[in-house]
Image (tube, rainbow, N blue to C red; front, top):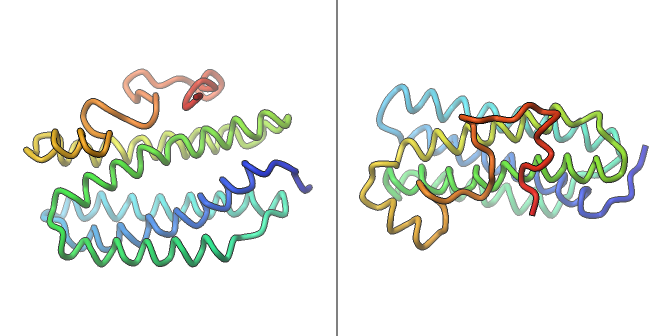
Length: 187
């Protein structure tokens, strides 16, 4: 069944390709962390990103939404570049920018849900909720890795993300049930 929702189509295509970029970035990131625990955590986040990509593709196929060759190329280059940079930019920046990225990704999935709901489709609510929550867990993990770093206040001021600022309104300590989470990421 084809859908005619331009913003939803574009968001699905971008998310599909951006998940590959994130997974690539986490490959380099995992290679350049200090502890086995951090390596395992970042590797699991990489696996989560590949799983999200698979889930998004299943949704796209259901609605005959093509993969964007442009986004695939763009995000492939971005992901590989970030992966390579992880070898030279130190410890703080990969954790900081990964957290910032994940913070924004949370709302991608809640916006997809809102777009689907606006056209009367509710069957993807749970999987989109779960992916949004998983992205929030990633954000929280990355922030925890830099929360005591002396660079965080400076970067938070410049990049508008950090200990006191997020790009979403999801609170894992007071997480809403899927059926009551419709106000997450509303503008």
